[in-house]
Image (tube, rainbow, N blue to C red; front, side, top):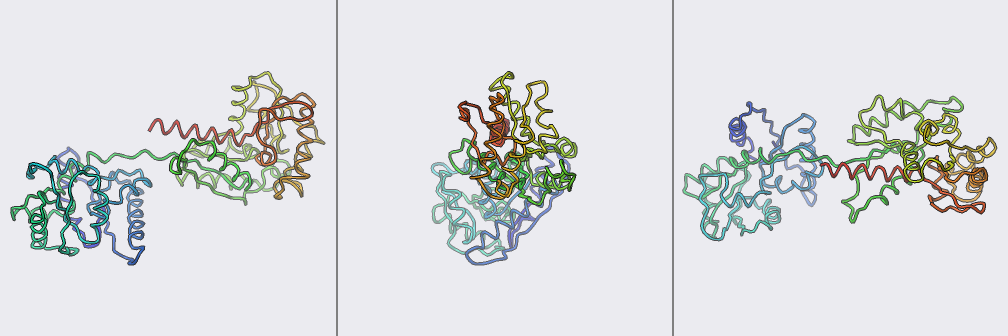
Length: 453
């Protein structure tokens, strides 16, 4: 439970505890965090929002069952807050129509005719509340007399009578104000018992929110390929506005040792940096992990055994796409790093489905030069010698009968676009970009998860 400065949130413990017990639950542990005013000035509310988020996050980490926000300002921030937590947060203002209809409070008499609601709130809260209640369908009045941060019983009664004189037919205090309800009822004011209602209905309404699907990306292997992959996820997503795109968390870690140099020359093993990066993506809430590096898939089988989040294989995605779209009888060529070729990771996935052709040693050196050469993609080049070297490898495989070519290094689609009709050596071939296929697969997984939630 979270309260504001000067808040009487602790008073809310009693009705909340009674509601839990009445529902057949055990005596609950109730923890209250009080948010201090802290900063002043134009960013004061922003600072308060961030402190509120940190408090909710702390509750989330402690395994809280639900959060109650019995203060007015906190209630107006629910929409913003709920987008960043799956912890159930009890809503008071969201069911305002039930409140004014008199549901759930036998001590409140719903007036006949149109309702005019007097809301007991301080000056600092009134603007936010007016905006939050604008669509409630009732007239809302606020007291002109300033309410102190901890009003006395006399102050509550004075404010309520001022509102009644202005036309209010019912008075509604903040959910934390248990003492206010008692004082107003003793004075004969028609007041809605916000604390009891919020405690009872809030428990029933507080439901976990489905966690937004999040893609985790092991980035920096290489950096340009990561940016290319992100662009393809955005383009593959059928979104009409920013908010309809998929959440993505990227760790751009170019310090991960070179995969090919390890596999071919026995240089530094990238296993631990790859695993550490995957673990950080897990901790960041990723639902799936992707590695936009074909060669890095030589390490995926070992990595996956120590992770709880699945790594979506770019290689399997590509092989499955070829089999489903083009069948298993067409000749398929692979353009990739020597590490990918020699470890046979693509061949292992394609085994029993179709055979893979690879360049001879001379043309494999040209493919490697297009990637790692002084004028290659990893050096920042996308035209000239790097493209000529790659096209030499492409022509070599096409001359040997390849009908479908896999651009099996994430740097290569930076040089050649995916195409169903790529023209070379007087022939038309299919040019496949595994990065793009992986992006589309991730979008499909996100859509399937959203459909289930």
